[in-house]
Length: 510
Image (cartoon, rainbow, N blue to C red; front, side):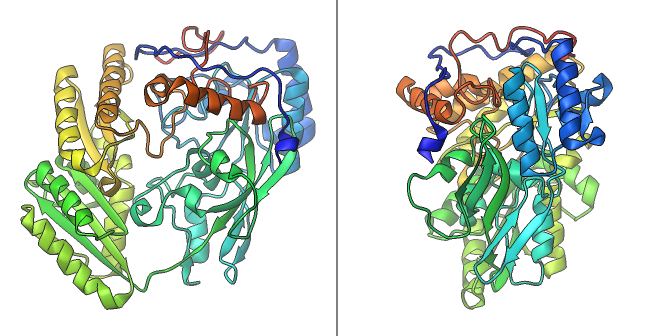
């Protein structure tokens, strides 16, 4: 595999200096000329058909950003392949014409990971949506990257197995996108993130060659290249097929709703539960701000006078679940819970999870725009980081609500604003930067599952040494020596012109 990747070529270079958080209007690459664009559009249509290419500006605007809406830039061309061979031909064409290209799934990512910096050709994989194989005997499935996460969940109903990664956006996000960002979800605490459930991938390299890494077996010889590709945000290769591990369903569930008078009591309960050696399948927290919106949307009966609630789920063998449930209830009450409710049946359990997973969709009741952050702190630092989030919100006069994966310290503060107001947008970026800085000060990270994308490049110098970044750049150089695949993502670059200029003819962030 290493021989196939080759070496040499220009390597991405790390930049030891950090940039100031500001409203950034992208790009740096040279705009695609009209002649080259016309040639590429004609050639792409020969590869995928006329209905598989978009080039009108009004169509391209749909693809100018992902879920991180603050930074926007349109691609020059959008193409929809249906097969691995289509992807390979598209990549080879881009190489021949000397233009940049990048993959995109459903666009639910939240850090600008599929933002077309500098334009170029965007390869949208949503038409590659087949569940190719489900093998229960060997406990794996093979899917194309455009398969929506919940489609596989639905396909497996009644089989006794499930695919464990369940991002809150699983009704819209694709498994290819989950692979790109190493997505987590509420059940990450017990079952792990996407990389723990990927056995192998088929991928198109930056020069158009097709490779398979791993496959249906549990172990693969050699270096852990799957671990490198999962979470690389489309900067190493374009994944066109995924072998995923299937997990046997637990015998039973116990789903609880802990109601607390303060966020501090709720976060202390989290530490107590984990400290007692109990690892729930999921341990989620919502504060009063988000509860108001969720209750208005779903009418579950959440107590709107509570400062915080914990959604706790234990699963496993029926024999031990009642005892574990009682231990969790006792620990919550020890930490000041005024009540712990139990889901009466599977229908109520599923409604609870619907409320949690669609909480972000309810935010439209609170604000015309929002920006959600993705930091990680040690669990014992949760009371501290929530206090700091409140202080930072007051400093910038920004309302911040919280819903997050509390069990593993993965916070998701949601900053509410109006993107039509330039001052508010500027302040949201500053406040976000301060929250992430505080996560680092707590010994944490600036991302747990959303990735670095373009939003958090400046923090890479703060999280890693120059030698660490150089090693990452060398790896990317082995896969992507010309840096024409998803340029200006994840790693800081020396001499970058990447965030100063507006792409000619493109709409800026505001």
